[in-house]
Image 1 (cartoon, rainbow, N blue to C red):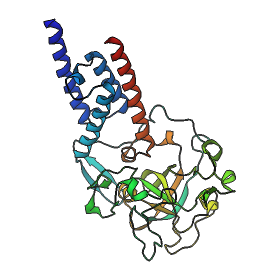
Image 2 (cartoon, one colour):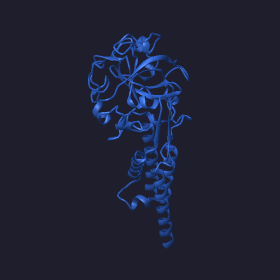
Image 3 (tube, helix red, strand yellow):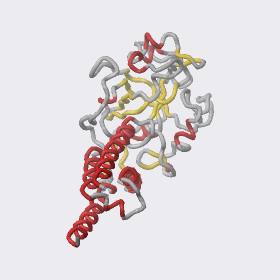
Image 4 (cartoon, helix red, strand yellow):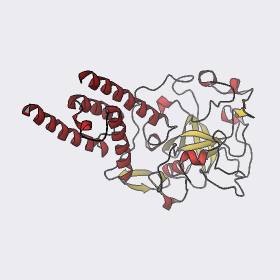
Length: 329
């Protein structure tokens, strides 16, 4: 009995050390995180969470992930910005292109490289909570697809550089992806799917659920400026137009408008990553999620495909560990 208690204490101590490293972000790979967490819980036989306020391995796993995400926010790597380059130094997370995450879905259309770049598109900056102004005729407290956009995001996505750190506002953690864009076509009008949507949207057949539900919302796109490429999710409609499918999905150029024919709105996070001015030119194209590398666009948001997959992975492992623990009791 004494040997078992000693072994239990040793496992608990080691478990806390491992958990501390996970929380501090030294093991940032989501698959490695969930695998080690599951193994830790299984081998400890429940001793770690049995000595705490958490009654099940599922609660413990979710708590560990929340701690880790909270700790990552407190790590403040220095950000060195220039018009075309941004690098990270220090002990914080480093964002580099890499292989796709495991478990990505089947491509919605075509295949790799199925979408071409739209070149030299005038690009403007917009943000959640922006009030109407001379060249911005509508409020951005709601989007074309989310009447509670401001609240669902978590607050005002201030564009002021001094009010931002590591691509997010300093005073709250966004509940949706801070890397968002607007393009001038809406596939829903008056609560119904537009008649041409079925013909003009390449992935319509694969993504359609029901009449009046957008197949465009949260779609991933790549935005290129100079030698940098950012990735973002399509979250609103504009600038100015809502019906220009010939540009968004075809070969036309954006229509003339008050912002020099702007055809793309991007969020402050995209602006900061690419080093854009208030009125600049970018290239953009649609991408499948499996083509999106991990980066600062993969960290936050209930609508973010990366975050959704991480949560699903943690839940699956937690359920398995919980069942295994219950079967041994």
